[in-house]
Amino acid sequence: MNKTFLMTSAATLSAVGVMFLSPVTASAHCDTMDGPVIGDSQTAIKENNINYIAKWVSPEEEANLTDIFNQTMEVRDDSPEAQELADQYLFENLVRVHRAGEGAPYTGVKPEGFPMAEEIVAADESIKVGNLDPLKDLVESEEIPELEESLSDVLATKDFDTADLDAGREYVMNYVTFTHLAEGEELEGGHVEEGHEEAEQEAAVEVDEIEVEKSTTNWFSWGLAGLFFITTIIGFTRKKA
Image (tube, rainbow, N blue to C red):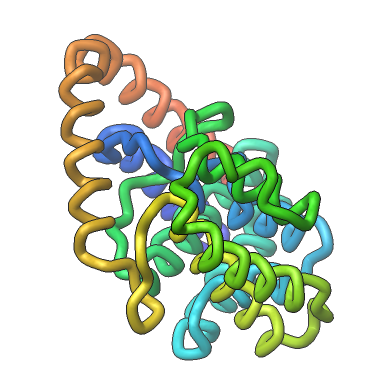
């Protein structure tokens, strides 16, 4: 049983497990396929450069992320199936570690097109245009001064050198602060306050209740798909051996 088989199997189990176990959240951002964390992950894979994503985790987690990234890059060339699953393995672990650093629960990676809070979309647009115009109709007037100051911090740090992880982490800190302020949440000591976590969990419960019937009818199909992926990878690995 070689290393490639072990890593590919881990990616397979990780991807299939999230299909079964991940509740849906209504206010997700960093954990969506359309969000900046996954976007940077895709760039890191394309450029084979971990610096694009290392900024999203603390220095203490950097070595662990490096191992995961190296394993992903090694396994993904084995087959198209291995590539898809290995990439998902990286996405999920990066999001999990990043959200832990925010003090937020990990609830899986949401698919492309997953709805995001309009304040978050407007916050990203504000960064692009360099002002708060996209947000002004979505927030209270008394919140504008703090948001202007926070946006100023984001704009002052967004053009950092990819190789400078300290500068990258400073930008991420400012970005996370700004987006959470746009949602009406406060950050304390680099972590999301308890109220934000509780709100996400309550939203997850509400949406999950709506999805229960759909999930119970689809679980068997997903299970067969997962088994197909596993057997495909096993067969490919044996042929390659």
